[in-house]
Length: 366
Ligand code: SF4
Ligand code: SF4
Image (cartoon, rainbow, N blue to C red; front, side):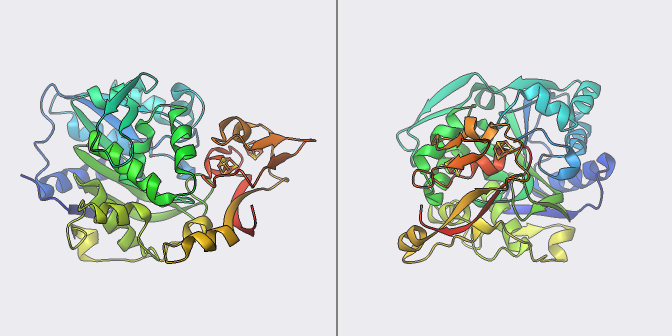
């Protein structure tokens, strides 16, 4: 039996697979999860592979985390595969850029495409009664979630639950963004619907080097030296946000609490980092400061954070134009122009810009 809401915190100061594996083994034992994967299980590893970036930039899950998981599982005879649905680009190309290909080749971990879709129909889902998910995320015996610790312009943070949004195949992600608009709580409920159907057996957060500022792709790497492990993704997210000193609860944690997915206390932390709490004052993404408070709608209408193009950094690659869910970006006279009246403030453009040329800031109108 495992205790719901229990999260193991440990310090880890470098990407050394042996150290990470030792910490992971201690955490699994402490949480009673050491027997949760058995001989012959087909296990899907789900890292954060939002875009293809050098692992030193802290955008994606570090390859040594994957190596460490494989080391821990090497004795139990599980069959490992790894999959995700990147924001753009092929999975193979993203794996190469993120430094995962050599590790996967060496350890015989198969890459699994998330392009094949399966629609989950569930009238009890919060918003997504018909939920298109990657078939692979539903068909493996076990899922091991490997999120990266980052700030997120829209949702405040991206940790364990948000990482599962990658189980929505390709363009269907844009459709959810379009439906949610800038309603962060609606979007949080979509994530929780996904979590209901894709329940990782472990969530291991890569917070050794994470990201603060303009996350999830354009922020600054920061050494948090944290590994966090739990079978309970909402509890892990809540406790990590507290540990980080987030200025307010994120929409995901608020919605999880409303639904009774968080224990009254929000969960409890165990392990070396929990016993010696450190609360680094994290710098949230500017857009994430959009608080939940009475009069929020009026406030949003008057002062709406919006994406802005830094012309000097823009390479006119048109990735943003092609992936804007609302189709409100276009190339006009060698410049990317945004129709702010129709922009839904989803910040997908900022997430996917390969050159960090899009910032999110406050502005009047739109
Ligand atoms: S994705 Fe970035 S670099 Fe490419 S056109 Fe858009 S703003 Fe410019
Ligand atoms: S311009 Fe950017 S923030 Fe606005 S809808 Fe398009 S992708 Fe979303």
